[in-house]
Image (cartoon, rainbow, N blue to C red):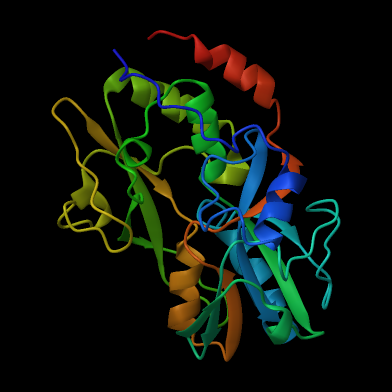
Length: 279
């Protein structure tokens, strides 16, 4: 039997454009989890044009950790394919600035950093399938506890391209068997949000030596009769950027995603199929 459903977050049914307006005015908080259900949220990577072709190919060859939702033209910050009335320089809650692979700044907008040769990459995020989980009464431990999801570096290597290489980072969520089956079915239907799990149980098989000690995020309790499930994670490109030591890059800060206008395909049917499903 599933745990009791969590309360629906206050911005769960807000439109993506409304969420972005709140981000622009710095009133949305710093984490976009539980916002604008039914729409794709995206990790952000911004690079100078000189690195864009290699990074686009890196995303193409590594679609689980880096599902490419959209890519701008050089200097384009409105990117209409991602959203109406969107300004990529202001419409995330928090950004990170990287120089030579080192995190140097966290800022609420990147207006002063913007350059005309920047190319924007929007990469799918697990917040999209988590919203679907909540709509289908699939419990999420990190929402229950108010802590961040646990993330781990693995022994799964990304396919390298140019300066970009590194391990796949995964996020972990523990479930009892009925909820795990539903979570796997739901996430597998949303490839733009990393798709289904890359590993269920046996964390040592993917190089996780101590599941009690995540590399990123907070420790997540795994209760009796639960299995840990691991999804490819959008932290992967940040780990890759740090390893590549490119001269300059901008990303989202952890949890502070771009909420796009791109609907999750067949979302209403997906929720309808699983919200009352008992396994």
